[in-house]
Length: 227
Ligand SMILES: [Zn+2]
Image 1 (cartoon, rainbow, N blue to C red):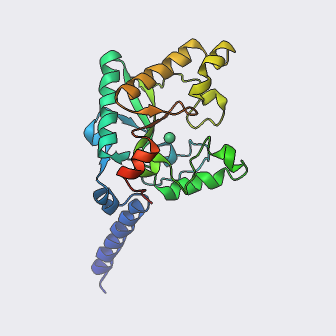
Image 2 (cartoon, rainbow, N blue to C red; image 1 turned 180 degrees about the horizontal axis):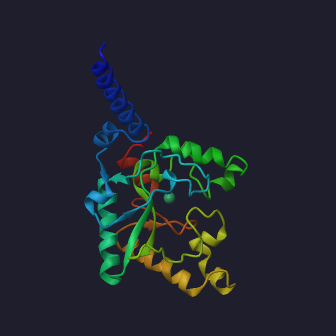
Image 3 (cartoon, rainbow, N blue to C red; image 1 turned 30 degrees about the vertical axis):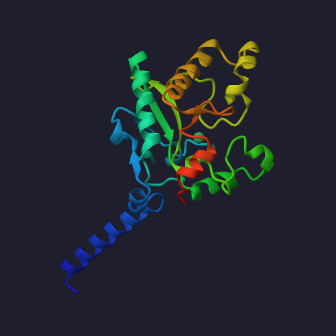
């Protein structure tokens, strides 16, 4: 083999490895098969910063690798774009910042196993059981916050994936009375919740950042889990 042929072979090998690495989490085949949408293709003004594609998450590990794109099923992605329109119409200085969308079940197992010290009954407050699957695993849930146009996130009282009662929307009234949350923090959460629920999403009682496009039962009827 000539030196030139070796170079060409090396380039092809690198391209092949690169494609495969990207395909480890969500492959092109999966995107086509499940009609997944890059949410920024629907709305280029949506900000995306996948926390599981960084070490800034509760595990301190980048579990998404090369995946930097937020994918969702088409209808949930359209609902998200609608929520963004509603937010921007009412608050022209604010933008939605996405932390997570479709999360393959393989990653759900990683999250679940990371909390192995927490009893399973309590663990489901923070991480859905991978056996039944999180609505994220179907591509129909989204985690997000709001930022000012300069990129600074609004103060929501806790960071993303804070595992504790301070993050629980159901306790906001008592947390406010106790002085654990400020009125501004609760109001900021309401701005997010109003935009999302007006677009058709449902909030959950334990995470201010999480929203489902459909209830679990409906999600399961409509979609399959992406492994
Ligand atoms: Zn979530």
